[in-house]
Image (cartoon, rainbow, N blue to C red; front, side):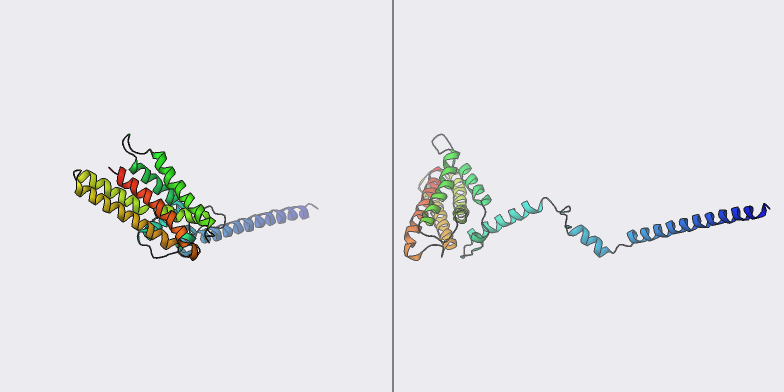
Amino acid sequence: MTQPPVSIAVDLDSLEKEIANREQERREHNYRDLSGNIGNVPARSASRTNSEPNGDGLDFDTLDEPKRDLKLVGEKFGQVLRPHENQKLLRDWDLWGPIFICVVLALMLQGNSKGPLFTEIFALTFFGSCVVTANIKLLDGGISFFQSVCVLGYCLLPLVVASLMCRLIAHGFPLNSISLGLKLLSAAFGFGWATYASMGFLAGSYPQKRRYLVIYPIFLFYFVISWLTLSYSA
């Protein structure tokens, strides 16, 4: 009478052991698959993950944008030194370069107590370009305000070079007619190059019948800066 329950108990124990063994085999199989997928990732996929940012924007380099901006500013410096009516300076305008040039020029021109102050030079260069830009806009110039300020500011770079040359001449030669002539040539070179570069970039952005009304303020602006360069680069 007691034999059937014992048989049923044995069958239940065997069934539980078989289920446990199958569960253990399934877990080991899944673990092997997972380990194989991780260990056998193609090198191409791994390199792509490391080199390309994902959609969440978590892998980007925070220095990429400043490096790109510095590269663009350097390219625009080269365009000013080699002007050929390239409109890229107008299209990709910025104010970092003009502000940097204004600061450097103001630092170079400030000197002894008789010379102009830093704030005076900075205000003259930066706000002077704003006044010239306002004149272009009033004459129906086809250029935005910040584009014109960008061009006029970048074209101050030859005057920075001229100021540096004048300082080198002042320190390398005694004060005589030769040094004065060399400084005059340097200032004239910077003035001519700045005017030529700005007119090349701004060509076509103003009505031709009002061309001289646009050229005269630009000419006067760079002439004043050139005179300061000649007078206070000592």
